Amino acid sequence: MSASAPPPRPEALAQQKNRQLIAVIVLVPALVALALWAFTWPAARIAPRNLPLGVAGPASATAPVQRQLEQRDGAFEIHRYADEAAARDAIEDRNVYGAVIVTAEGPKLLTASAASPSVAQMLQQAVAEEAADGTKPTTVDVAPTAAGDPRGSAFAASVLPLALAGVASGAVVTLLGLRGTRAAGALLGAAALVGMAATAITHSWLGVLEGNWWAEASALSLTALAVGAAVAGLAALMGRAGMGLGGLLMVLLGNPFAGASSAPELLPQPAGTIGQWLPPGASASLLRSVSFFDGAAATGPALTLAWWAALGLGAVLLGSALTQHRGTGEPTSKRTPALAG
Image (tube, rainbow, N blue to C red; front, side, top):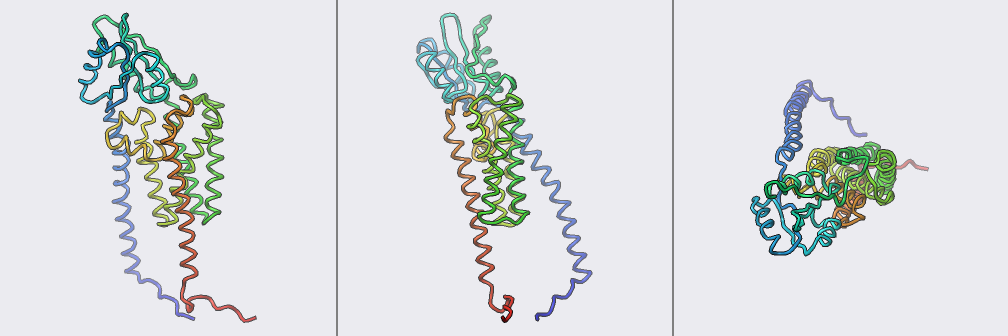
């Protein structure tokens, strides 16, 4: 039998405790600073940046309106449409957030508060400023928010709980020591139940969503799976440090960069772009599409979530395989000898 290792000396224990104390003193303020930066910086810099906006009507009449909007230092990305019908189709396809229709009676503004109540309100103010004195533009909401959530605040508030549910499922799978196909099965089952429970609350009870029930449940389940698989996958490859990294990535960056309460084009760059690459932001975009726009522009965010889920589950299976390989690859002298029969 090999001799047991001697107990650590008191001096070594004291040094270890001091290092832990210093780590806590340094890490806690650093995490607080990171959280404050991630949540307050985007909120303090809300402004339109290449926001897709349509202009429709005769070219001679729309040219002055387009020039006025283009003078706003890159605030809008102008799309030209022949008439109001084409502009409505573009809004319903989620190609633009709204459109200014130039008519003989004056400007008419089409908005889509379901795409972003903040953008709809901002467009009303911008068009009113550009209108002639005494002219009040007519506003039509082509895609309104749900009756149970007229300001869209409940929709925006649903992003964080979904991220937390995904982080929790990944953490529980890791802490329970589940590996391989058992871990993958647990993540899939938990995600399916999270999606159905979340849809029952937001759609059936609160009326925050109003699209196809099963499409919404699928989107919410895919979100929970993407987050949970990412956390569990990082933990399978990096240990518990990976679990913490996954949680920070999804909650401290994914949530404030999602643009659920505003829009990705209103966030400072690169926060708006990064947010759409992370599951919370992709989830908000996907859920808006399936709930209010009949699935228009849902492919991109759905693929983003699917990639996170696939890579996370792949990392879970890979981590399990590497662990088994290390276990079976131990030298013979270190293995427990089998008892003679």
